[in-house]
Picture 1 (cartoon, rainbow, N blue to C red):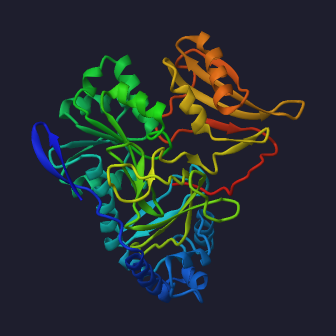
Picture 2 (picture 1 turned 60 degrees about the horizontal axis):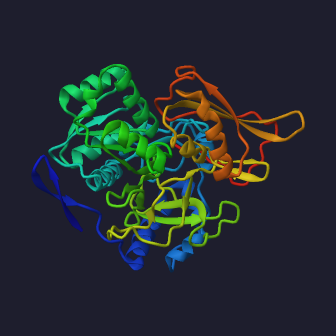
Picture 3 (picture 1 turned 60 degrees about the vertical axis):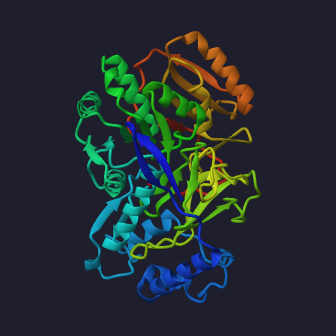
Length: 442
């Protein structure tokens, strides 16, 4: 499907994802992939044997899940790359690793063909966000073994945009570079987008924000949270869009430029939204864990991969005709972030959403702990320009989440600044009840 946008007065053809192929076509691609993998991939062979070929896509439910723990354990037993490799090692040309923020680092290898698939998929993200050959894309990531920079670089190349690498710079240098080169698009985490806008104001560099037309977020929940998105858009005077992917899976959701949130890439993935305890599909309107199977990544395949991302099974399309199921709130949180407090399921992202509705909120830190009476409690330390707002925040948390939270107002600048994947949660309870299975994220 094509759409037209205007970049500085010039009409540009924008190629959006095509319609989702019929189940028969996707089933054929899936069976072809699994047949190739089961022949030479030692990790997958025993997991898939006796299940192939699949008669329908629904038959995928008979296959075992794959978790990050499975892959990490395999690499520990067969260092350094494990046995989830379909081809001889000399076929692989790209090595990346997960950040390890949720556990042990996982190493992921890609063949040239799989890396070209990555490039095309991130190109879809850029096109859906309205990025084209006239744009200058600033990548606020560090060089290193993590995939965000390299995949974003390839995606920008796929649409013919100029890439401005911001690795090895502090925030002020990045703002100066954005200003000097007239960057039109910024890629970063939602946390860093908020931080960079604040640094611009504090450093007298607000003119660096004027050329940026869109901020494309990934890496953590936030870009689709209404209050966070609004804060980014107000701070930058630009649109905020969200997308999602994993090092070990690929880019599985692209931004909905028309209605917000994201769409699942169901032309390249089989996506399931499942109850994390039972493994059964959740009904419309319910939340569940996103489980994905890539249809074209053969060198390091993952079958029924438990992403740990919690999404809503939304029964309504976005109204703009974009293919793939619509996730209007994007990634709601991480199953490994969710905690149970006094019998209630709590996502830190839900607390952040309420915080960002108040002006003058800086950094914050959430601590779950047990008081001497053995009651689980929540402490929220938050930097406030107006400390008197602490009472209003506490009331809003109670009204919206049904949760009593102890608020500790702090002066701005007290807490460490979060500029990458944010780490704002500490669980100090000796016994941490969990109602979902914990898996790691890239």
